[in-house]
Image 1: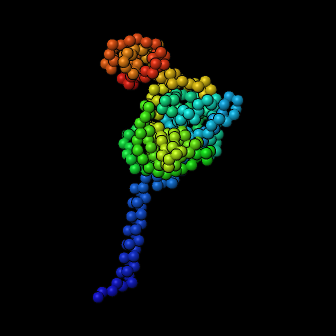
Image 2: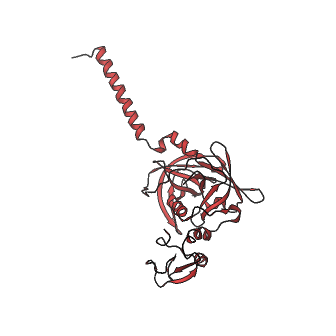
Image 3: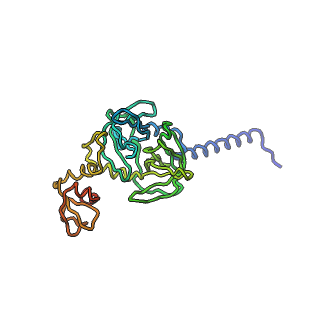
Length: 294
C-alpha cells in the first residue's frame, strides 16, 4: 500500500480547492437575471411607484410603472391612470417626478405610455422582442403592491391566455393591488410584460400584458403629439396620431365586412373599399391596417 506524503496530499487539496472555485465561478457566470441580486437591484432603479391624483388633489390610485424606450417615458396600465389629472412618480431612491402628459393609450389592452415633466435620468429597461416565451421560464416581478415600493417577487411563466382581443402572460410571481403597471422581467433581464391583474380567489394566478403590445402602441405614436393627463386621451386620438401622418389625414377606406381601416383605397388587404371619415372608422371599431401604417 502506498501512502501520500504530506507534500502530495497538500498539492491534491490545493487542486481540489481550485476545481471547486472554478466550478463555482462557472455556475455564477451561467446564472441568469433572476439569480443575480445586483442586476435585479439595478433594474429596480427604473421602476417607479405611482400616486395618481384627481383635479381636486385627492389621491385616487396607487400603481407602478417602468421606464422604457428612453429615460423620459414611462409605461403603466391604463386603469392605473384612468380618471387622474396628475401623477407623482416616486423612484427607488425616493425622488419624486411629476407626470401630467400622456403620449398614447390603449384602454382595451390596458396600456398607457406617459412622459415625465422632467427627465427621470433612469436607464430604460430592455424589452423582449423575440417572443420566444415558454412555460416554466423564470420571471421577476417588480412593483409596489399595497404601496410597498419596488417589491421584488420571483416565479415562473405558468401559461399563455387570450381573451377579448388581449394576450396575457400568466405567471406565479406574487403581485397585489398596487403592482399594476409594474415590470415582469425574464431570466435574460428583459421586460416581457406589464403586471396587470391577479385572481383573488386563486393562488398565484397572475396576469401581465405582453410587452409586444406596448411596443406596437409606441410604434403607432408619432413621437411628437401628447395630451394632458386630465383630458383623458382617447384611444381614437392615439390611433389618429399615426393616421394623420398620411396624405389622406382625414379620410380612410374600409371594407364593409372588414376590421381594418386603410390610407390607400388600392391596398391589397381590402376588398370593395368604402371611403369614411377617420374618426368615424375608429368609433366603429376599425383599427389601422398593418400594411398601410407601418
